[in-house]
Length: 323
Image (tube, rainbow, N blue to C red; front, side, top):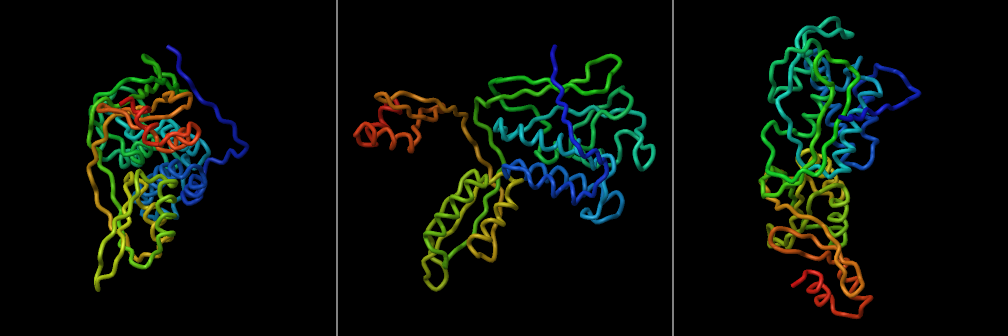
C-alpha cells in the first residue's frame, strides 16, 4: 500500500507565536471559506488554551502549536475540503493513547489537556499505543469542520487517500485513511438561515447584496416582498448558510444594507444527490444537473446556445433536458 506525505519548506522556523498572530495569518488565506475554517480551528485551540491557563484567548501564547506546521496542517486540510467540495465530514472513534508527552509546560498525560478539551463530545476508544495518538491540531480541525462521529449516509465511493505520518509504530502503519464519497440518497443536514427586514434599501443594492453573498459562500440567498409597520412596502433578505460561515455572512449583510440587526435560526435541509454533465444541443455544449427525478439545464448555457442557434431559449432547454 502506498501512502503520501507532504513536505513543506519554510524560511521562518519559529515554533512559538501568539494565537492572535496565528489567527491573523490564517485569515489571510483565500478563498474565504478556507480562511473561515482555518481560523475556526486555530481559534478553537486558542479558546481551549485560554480556558486551561485562565487567560483571554486573544492573549494566549502558543508554544508547540505556534509554528508554520500548524498552519500548513490546518490550511492544507481546509483547502482540500474546499477543493473537493466536501460538505460533511464523518469520523470513526478516535483512539486515545496512553503514557505521557513532553511539552513546553512539562510532561503531560496523554491525551494532553488541550487535546482532551477539544475532543469533548467526540467518540473515542482506548488504545494500547504509547504516546500521543490524536494531536491538538487534528482535534481542532475535527471541531472546526463539525465532524460527525456517526455512520455516514449511503454513498458512492469516489476515491480513497492514504496519508503517512513520520512516527514509526511497532505493529501497524502510521497512516490516515480518507474516503471521498457522493451521497446516493437524501439525508437531512442542519444549516442556518439569516434574515433581516429592509424598508429603506433600493432594488439595486438588494440585487448587489444577493450577488455578494453568493460569491462569499452562501448556499443560497433570496428576497421576499413584505408589508411592514405603517403599511410600508419592504423586503426580507434571506441567506442560507453553513453554520460556520454564518457570522461572516451576517457581518456582510449588516455592512452592505445598513441594517441594525440579523435574525438567525437553524433549519434542516434534505438535498438529493446530483451530478453535472454536458450534453450536445445542435452542436452547442449545455451543462445540466441530473438528479434522481430528472435533469435541469443550466440557464446561462441555454441562453448562450439559443443566441448562437437563433432558437427560443425554451426550445433549447427542452432539448437539453431530454424531454
